[in-house]
Length: 191
Image (tube, rainbow, N blue to C red):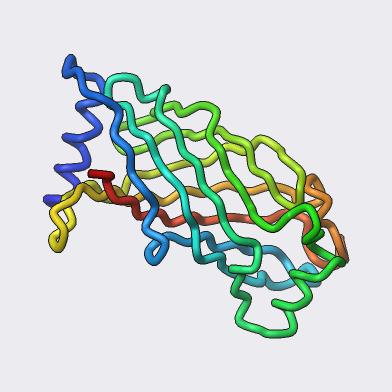
């Protein structure tokens, strides 16, 4: 309950008269990940995960819309739980490694929608193709890290897109076009 009160207090500061400089946070690569799912043969969902996220969040308390998010994910950081699927996902059938060594997200607008929620619109670059996506974001926790004393923010975000929009459409429609993402981010305040 205490962490929710801290989160609510933090979000309440967004509307307050306090003038503060924007604060930078770096993603904790060990605690941040992207989970994805897609239908397989129209019956069951397959799941996978990307680890190794790197990036920054710049948080402007006085002007939330001026905040920003930048994330880079190494394409080969994909985990599928099955070696054959891993090799297939990184093959030319699915992923053009000549143009897409990384997956990137760069925010363009941030719109607070509640005390602990926001919509973050940005450009997703996958397989060398860039398209806009909207993330529905929830602030899960905002506190000081008990080990380091540094500020720490934790978020969950969700979105979905059609992989065919990114020239990533091998075996469609046998393998579903729609991809669902759940993004878990932990970020530490830069001192």
